Length: 507
Image (cartoon, rainbow, N blue to C red):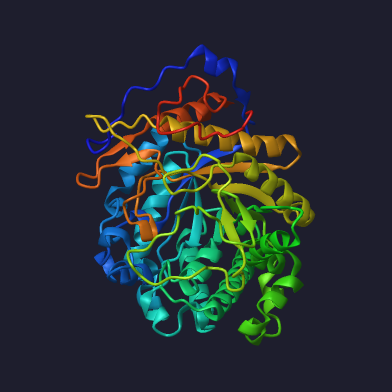
């Protein structure tokens, strides 16, 4: 451990925690996740050029407090200490992304210095006994490609293949799990339709085209990597909601929930697993021109067989056809005009259900994760023989560090326990989930929220870059070491950071 990382004494293990714990399968992988733009910094070092998020974050009004990713967590220079920290916590796997703008600046020729960094990172992980899980795209499209149309241009698909193969050229002998995309819903619809994320467009039609091209890029890379090495584990990560009709007896609420499910979940699942867009989705968006961009052979490429589906889950939602009297304030921008990310769901509105919420105003609903995993296994992954991993799950709370920088984040600790318990509930129901990655290892640049929201199990002091594991990190480390999962609030009290975030969980 370096001087830049503080390690508080591990928490004691109360007898109550042991008495109320459940076993975690020995082959169930426990790890953490990050993304390049959110932690690396080093904006223009060693040949890196701007991505759409550099441009967006430097646009007045785009990000809270005018925050940028120029420095972030300085992981580019502090990666060795960060890997050592993960090793000290017992992490079994680390899910990270490579920066397209660092590897192929401007979307063009390969930058050897950019690949050198990821080679050092991967070698450090392997030396520490931590399995690398590589994501090729976590939203950092080179700005030069956006200037030529971005994900609304089919050229971007070709450039993504070039970039992906360049990364594989360097790391293919050491990284076994490769996922092409992280959350194409956010890249397409928050970025091209809602205007909340980079590049900040507000076009329903552009979002649909971007989504199609993102999936086409995914399929092309899966085909190329499969041809190179049949032993690789290939797939992608999708973010999901569990959309429940507010009133299941009201057909208008049922249809509103259907639209959200179609335009967030099935728009990606069906082409990938079934080689076709859902018929109801195509009807919903018929006026927006999606089918004009689906070329012969596209869906065959998109549905190239995969090995793993990453599941990102933060919350479900109750959907009604009328606006709520009180809303969940979880959308943000620094003053820009934005719109709904859903291209054709104007009469679908989220309603609070009285559940506890995180600092993002996201409802805490662990049972939604169980239901999601069961559905994915039954309808998609199971029939295709595709493995499921929970690749992101986490919570922002208003952390209050003590004089030593330590955060006694009991709410987050209970959140992790409750959601891990929800995954094990799915395993008990016959869903062969292989692993869980907490989001995130570090407090970091939280997109349009800037540095205002903290998801990390390790606190980052952004003035000094000192890392301090929070109580949740120590608890997670203990779960990994003992292979025992305590009940959400066992050994804790509810005086941490709000009401019991485990909700009604009986883990």
